[in-house]
Image (cartoon, rainbow, N blue to C red):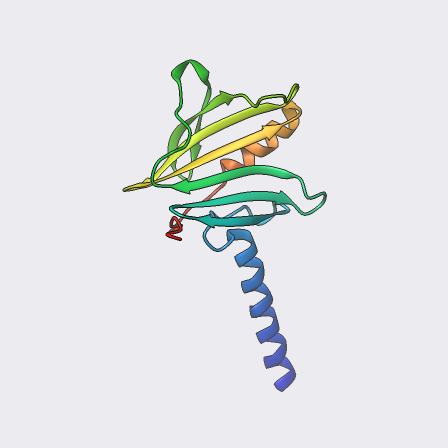
Length: 149
């Protein structure tokens, strides 16, 4: 009986650790089967989350949670409409200096009063971009709050 209780406790603890790595403790919840984990940085008035692939350590997307978006969308840069965490929004074309061949997409998700999520994606191919968009469109923000450090 003790063995069963111990095994059950270990499974519950490992499940809690796995769930925390998927949500990043302050970052939105990632899809369970994504193979990604969050790297998180809390700053004064913002939380920055990077979704990192376990397979190669590459960044798939980044989310910045703050009171004001650092990104100002322009209608002329709209690429396609999407839905993130039940909210309609648009993907916008972006640019990075000195990054030939890298595609950038950005969007803003309103999370409630005085809180937004700026999601940014970078990809070297259409396939990578499609995969990153799929992950971003599967994010769930729940009760995620901006750091007050």
